[in-house]
Length: 416
Image (cartoon, rainbow, N blue to C red; front, side, top):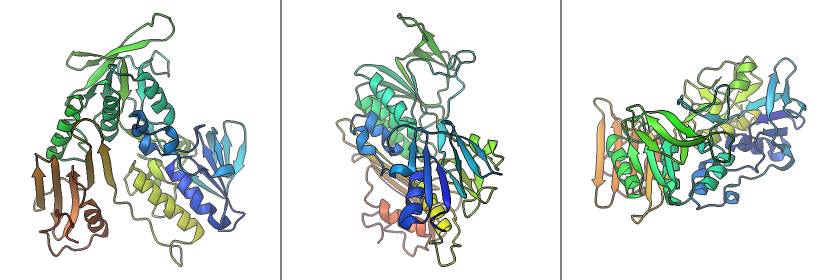
């Protein structure tokens, strides 16, 4: 790729900035990054640590690409025929290659009373938890003793609940599924997580569907103020704050309006090209081989892959395909007298008929380790409380190599 080739990256998050940095190395391209948020680039993964009061926002900063990044500028239209991107400030950028790294939006559940008729603003006291602005607004609102209801018991909801508890809030976590983090954890691991959060003071309701919000007009007038949530069984929970942590949805509107193939996400091939070969998609907005990851690890790997494809550095012919990412989920829950609880999950932690399951549990030490072996290969696992073996296990899982000895998989050397 020549140095005068114009590459526009839409999205100033982890994936977009990583891709831009790789492309700009050695002047391989003239790169422009459009970042919708006005803040300096930051690591979204660490927002819960800011909310918990453990990190200042500055600690989460990502390397700033300087003039290549246009902060506070939103792409509003892609014209594929002219190969231009129109921005909300009126500027028009031409491109030779376009990279969509538009990320995802928080899922806003269909709650009664969430929006006023024809309104788009959340009521006062109701917060999404996706951006730095969301985090700072929620952080400013929380104080010791405030009543907070977190809707959603996945990774995001658990992170938000423990952060609010660390700030002294009275937290209720409402999870529609039968257990916490049901996508990553099995029943035993989820039960340990449930116990840990309860010890932090979090009140947990599973198999609990929130039906709507109750609101009141504030004394000073203007808008409405949330006062609680209504459950499907008719029970009402008082709340000063409501946090919507119901997951995320790929942000595909720009791609869809441009006529690109969109399903769950923007559909890409093994070179992360969309249905227009001059446009690539990476990160939370991309769907590869029917899968949208929504995690930092795959986003970074896709960014590296696109940069390698465009610069020809992936292999001598520049033809190595992207075959997907084996994503590892990690979370540290830090609070309370019992100390932190670390967890990690990877692959298929729910066994199929015929799979071998190796499990070690120690209730006293609050540790749980489980791996699933299919044939002679490791296909998944869950670890809580003790992660000394996770690096070795992850390597074995990622490499997909045949295992010759299962007996030491969960020992501290991971069988290495």
